[in-house]
Image 1 (cartoon, helix red, strand yellow):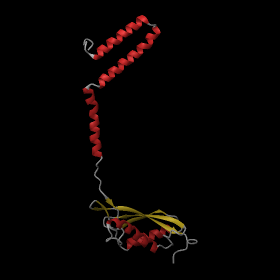
Image 2 (cartoon, rainbow, N blue to C red):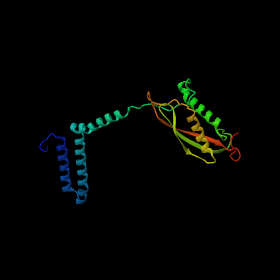
Image 3 (cartoon, rainbow, N blue to C red):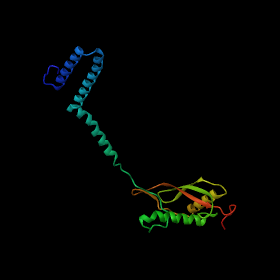
Length: 203
């Protein structure tokens, strides 16, 4: 490489060395000490630029990018099975866009009409919130009813009574679906009990 007179790098190097020799002859040593690091820095930068411009180096650097893009494209389109939660009975004829709202409204109408204490009236003060958890199996039957939140004053027991009554009556939900297959789904229902002086039971 050093023997090639037409190589741009060799020409540039010879010019710099000649200029450095002239400086050694005509200028002070302190100036030479300042110029020598500057010259080394220029030569280092030139070597880096020539290395990056080499076609083989650019191909090697671009190869991993293609592999990363292929991996990302596979992760962008995962297969997802749609999940449909169970529906309370009585909304079989409702359209798809209104069926969920119909199910929620029908369930709360049934529950608040049968609570042993005043409940479901937002204009009254809240005596407590009860959360009940239960399983709707593949056949729409209610199982494993559990009390998750109980404010006390018999409100939690009253909510359990309601759901157990639904279970014993044979009430069937429309089961949850994963694609075209019915599945078991756990549900949670929140009941708002209202305060009407000193926890009086509903008559």
